Image 1 (cartoon, rainbow, N blue to C red):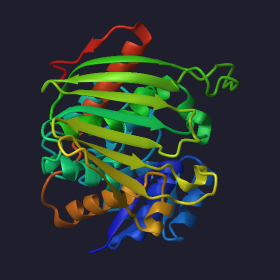
Image 2 (cartoon, rainbow, N blue to C red):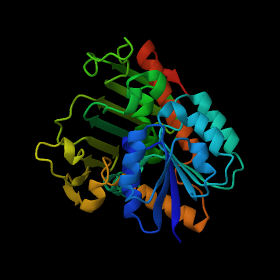
Image 3 (cartoon, one colour):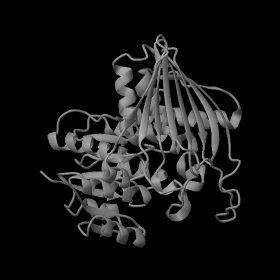
Amino acid sequence: MTIRYGLIGSGMMGQEHIRNLTLLDGCEVTAVADPDEGMRALSVETSGGKARAFCDYKEMLSSGLVDALVIVSPNDTHHAVLMDVLDTGLPILCEKPLCTTVAHCREVAAKAEGRAAPVWVAMEYRYMPPVQRLLAEIAKGTVGTPWMMAIREHRFPFLEKVGDWNRFNERTGGTLVEKCCHFWDLMRLTLHSDPVRVYASGAADVNHQGERYGGRTPDIIDNAFVTVEFRSGARGMLDLCMFAEGSYWQEVISVTGAAARVDAKIPGPSRFTADGKERDAEIEISNRASKDVTTEVVEVDEAVLAAGDHHGATFFQHQRFRDLVRTGQGTPEVTLRDGLWSVIVGAAAEESARTGQSVDVRGAI
């Protein structure tokens, strides 16, 4: 069974989705809808000439060419697009964040209630092989009860997008929603608990300060520290820097319990390294009792690494989504509730960074 995919939006992340889908057995990108002529042409080329291009996604929906949808349009369009496509019977994979506001996420979740076809929120970081290894160690009790989770992401600035839509909070939801929803999702998944309080300190200090769009200066945060308290008593912390593209590890994700600490160390994309070469991720386990430290290299197929900027995660996420669509059984691994929670925490962090006050999110869902 070949699943025919239609993409709504085909910018930088859209191209990554197309490249990964072409690597997967049983998947074919047959249609792409994008208002930008250049991106439509590039999408047809990336699909190997198999995709038909549309200016309007509504025309694509009526074409009969697709069995499943991938929404990869700018963040602030997700709400309107979802409210339209939820009326179809098609499986949907929607890029993060689900929407740019909590209110819009709630509307989408309410409309999708009782829908037979799945809606999966694309949280790629869950599917990075080193993160999967970290989650496996937590599941088998390596650290004991996880009490602390620290995520450091030191990386390159936001890249240029069509229309520069990612330069302003009003279109992205803010950096702590747009970029960091991945991390709030990972914290909930790893700690098996919902957040209760969020505190953030962040600012726009370095990136994009010399840029002007219609006379306006970009307002997206480029560095922050965020602390999240969980109902279980566990705590998570994010250390984010968007002007540290020289870092050897782009992400270091650490989970610590009474027995041990597990670190997942993840390199950035090869196009941002000095030698242009891919690097392997690592898992490091520090045992508290024995004082032993073990390190394991986590290898990923080079073709999968080359297909995107998320260390193979997009490929493995699509693999799981494909299997769900193919069998027609089960539920999405990343639900609308997960997507809503990640925006709740991100929006709370943005508010906290602006006001200097912690934000209570108990009872948010």
